[in-house]
Amino acid sequence: MSGCIVGQCEVCGDHIFETDWDGPIMEEYYMFVHEKGCKKKFHDNRIIKQLKEDINRLRVENHELKSENKWLKKNGHVGQISLDLED
Ligand SMILES: [Zn+2]
Image 1 (cartoon, protein in one colour):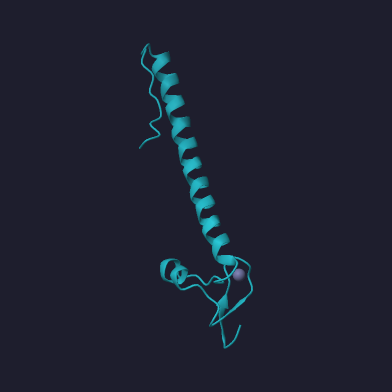
Image 2 (cartoon, protein in one colour):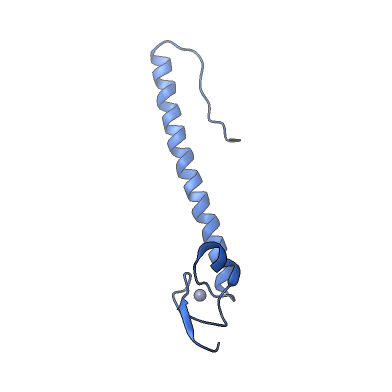
């Protein structure tokens, strides 16, 4: 650690010194993250966030399809619409 403080780490909240931050994360996300220690956690958090968003989206789609299936059954249609997870 040396030099000036350039920002605050997105992961641990501590100050980041100019020799201390991760370049690729800054280029990609415009966020300061400690190069040592916090970098892995930052990427893990991104993946978890993405997976949570995917799960929520699939939940909504599944719910919509269930409602649609209910409607189709009620109206005498035999076929079932299924969720295409490959999409
Ligand atoms: Zn940090």
